[in-house]
Length: 118
Image 1 (cartoon, rainbow, N blue to C red):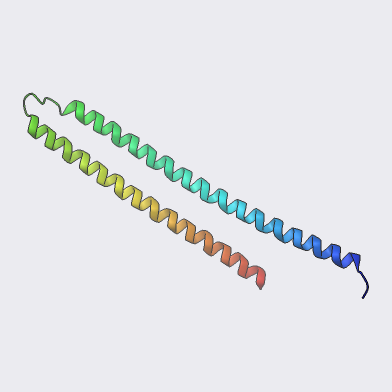
Image 2: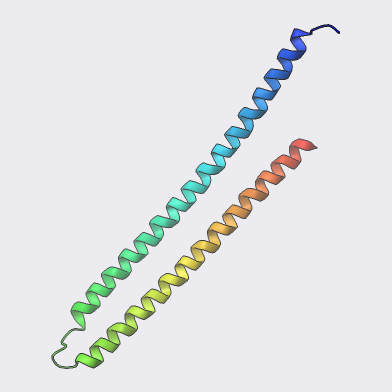
């Protein structure tokens, strides 16, 4: 059995190319997911800041407590409750969006892998 340098060299180049391609794909997918998550986190942070500002403004507007302390407290508590329910809905939507994005990425990887096999 003869040692064929060209065959071994070709095999090594092919293996290195495959590893580099897979590494590049994983890196790209990680960046896509990271960017999506960062965008969603910024959106949530912005919504929370908006809610905090609304709460602050409502506290300033609704607080002639010396006249109607119980009514104002109840109104403010109801508004805060509604705002936090909206935040919960936003978090649920973001969670669903991230799950869908993850599933789309996985499907894209599978489709790309299947195309390479054919």
